[in-house]
Length: 288
Image 1 (cartoon, rainbow, N blue to C red):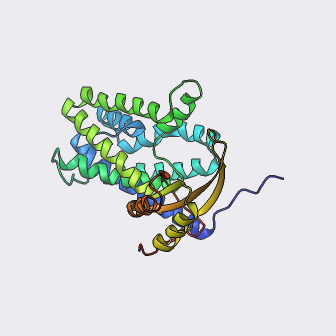
Image 2 (tube, helix red, strand yellow; image 1 turned 30 degrees about the vertical axis):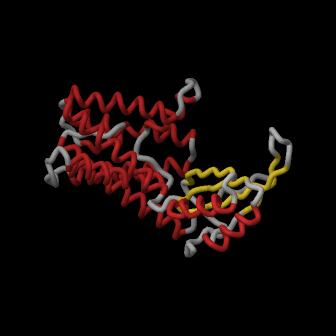
Image 3 (tube, helix red, strand yellow; image 1 turned 90 degrees about the vertical axis):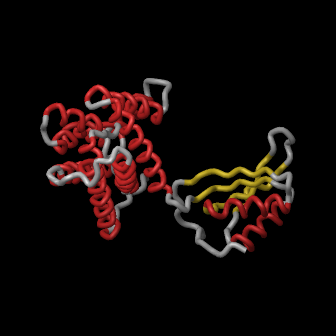
């Protein structure tokens, strides 16, 4: 029997709506108060909407909504109802927000400050929307469809689309605008990562050592982190090995490495980034 689809509680639903509203609102502020008045565009559907709105002198919010509609239908079929509804709500808030903010004067016309602050605010807003299960741009959905028929990854296809759109700003506005747009896009891209992963980013750690018990005990006592022992087999040697797995924060990485090197300098250590951690005993405790 298939498991019943998980339903959000009223509090979770309210939190999602609030985050979607704040995120889409911040994107509206970034566009109308920083980027658009300075002829700086973003990538994806937002960038296309800015260019078309400039050429037609029609409201930006109109094109943000109309150009995203086809991808809402595709997103509903490819990803699901919850994603489509969250995206629709975010796009509507963004479209209304840009319309209401359009008469407001830009906060700065500095070619340095506009892309920097616009990119930061845009990145935070988009990151909040993505964390809430939605999207404000249909480019990713196009990329998912293209990956089924091409050897390219989603990220590569999105980058190709966005570079083409950002380059278009050079013909519509100026080449200075295109370069400033690239700066804003890069900043927003990095801020989205920080918003999704958090400043105190979590990391997964895998350790293979003949001193696994001592290292595991040291991690628990000196870092205050729980560990899990996994049993593996070496493909080359054929011998059994005990593998230590644990999750730490970015700030604890240096201490973790020093513990491992202190107890077994020949140990195999692999550290990777984790976007989210839930459950278990992942709680912050003092480092000794």
